[in-house]
Structure formats: structure tokens, C-alpha cells
Image 1 (spheres, rainbow, N blue to C red):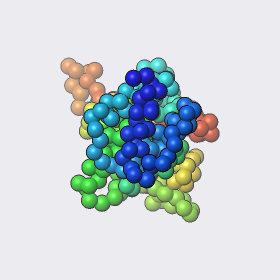
Image 2 (image 1 turned 30 degrees about the horizontal axis):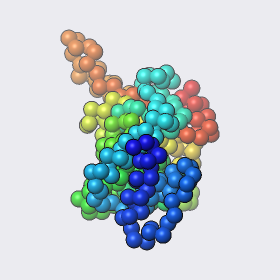
Image 3 (image 1 turned 90 degrees about the vertical axis):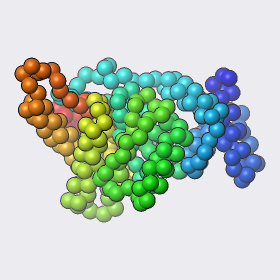
Image 4 (image 1 turned 180 degrees about the vertical axis):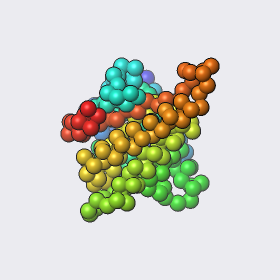
Amino acid sequence: MTHAEKRLFLIRALLDEEPEYQNIVIPSAEDAQNILLRSLFNVRMPGAVSEDFLKVQDEFLKEAIFAKGITELPSFTPVQPDIYLWQGDITTLSCDAIVNAANAGMTGCYQPCHNCIDNCIHTYAGVQLRNYCAELMEKQGHEEPTGQAKITPAFNLPCRYVLHTVGPIVQGPLTAEHEELLASCYRSCLDLTQKNGIQSLAFCCISTGVFGFPQNRAAEIAVRTVREFLNQAQQNCTTACSESAPERTNRIKVIFNVFKDEDYAIYAKLLG
């Protein structure tokens, strides 16, 4: 199948899943078909899916990501030791893990074509990610607490893992509790990197945007928390490593990923 044929196959399969979709007319324009397909991905509830569907979906999504252009971590220049700043689409980044700013339900954004990072990551990872997260949450039996994190496979994304963390929602004055919960998001993700042997991690701007956390303060907390973690990890490694194995380190490369020019300027100033 061509890329266009795969898109139509997926649209028809998703429409066939729901009786109320039977009267939807598939548009002829490519852009309109892409919007419809993404919308169908976004609203699909967790559930079983055929191997034929997964095969076509996986091929289609990998082709779509490749067409957007994959960015490899080795092409970056650090702005500080083990710290990088990159402006771009996190779903095209090839590194060990990326961070998703999730909601408490942890199964992604269900609003069709919403531009939040949760929606983008689930869209391009494929339906397997929502199913995997749903299984995690069913076993947990309750919503994900703010400030913690979970790790999942990345499925069709060019990274290996996705770390999902629920940031604080700021609907009034910013409080010390908001700030501590945001720092906890970063620490929880960094702790998971150590436990899972992850050597490169890309953070999005957790809790900003629709979650209401002021961008400047969020960036200050992010940079401070990452620096503290990397400094402590380096001290621990220096203490643990023997003279006979001086190169044995567990250094983590951290990428601050931004999408907006405004956020890039904030991080660039903080990182010098």
C-alpha cells in the first residue's frame, strides 16, 4: 500500500468500529483526511485492535514522522555540561526518552486535534500507547497523583520510552505547593531515568500553557531541579567509581525541549 492507501485503510477501519460514524463522508483532500484520521485516533477509547490494523498504522506513523524529519541527539551542542536546549517537535526527537505532560487519567488527550503535547505524543505513538496506559491505570485503581511519573514504551516514536508526569494546575495565585509539585515532576522523571538505565531525556515545558503555570517560574524550577540532580549524580558517581574504572559513569544528558520562541528565549537566558 502507498502512504495514501494506508491512511484510507486506517480511516475506514476506525469508522467501522463505531456505528455512529457510519454516515461520515471521507474527504478527498489529503490534509482533510489527515485531520479526520488524527481526530479518530484522539477520540478512540482504549480497546483491542487487530494485527492488520497495527501493521498498517505502524508503517503509516513511522512514514509520517520520517517525513517531518527526525532529529538525532548527537547533532546537538550542549549549552552546559550534559544540558541541551532544543526548539522543535518532540515527537521527532531520537533520544532514549521524552517526557509527556499528562493529565491525571494518563491515557492521553481525547480532544480531536488538540495541540497539547499529550495529544501529539499519543497520536504519533499509536493506539498501543493509550492501551498500555489504560492497563497501567486499571492496575493502579486511581488517578495519577500530581508530581509523580510513569514510564512506558514509545511504540512508533523515534525515542525508546515516554515518561508521563502530571504537573500542577494553577488556577489562581502561584503557591509554594505548586512549585514543589512541579519540582517533584522533574525529580520523578529523573529518578526513573536512573532506575531504567536511560542516558538521554528530553523534558517538555511541564504545566505551562493550559495548566496555567507561569512560564518564567516554571523554567527556573526546571533548570534548578535538573542542575541539582545532575550535580548530585556526578558527586555520587565520583565517590563510587574506583581509580581502576575512572570512566564508569552514569551521566544523563538532559534536553530542555521548547516549541515556542518565547520559551526558547526564557531557557536560553537561564542557561546562559
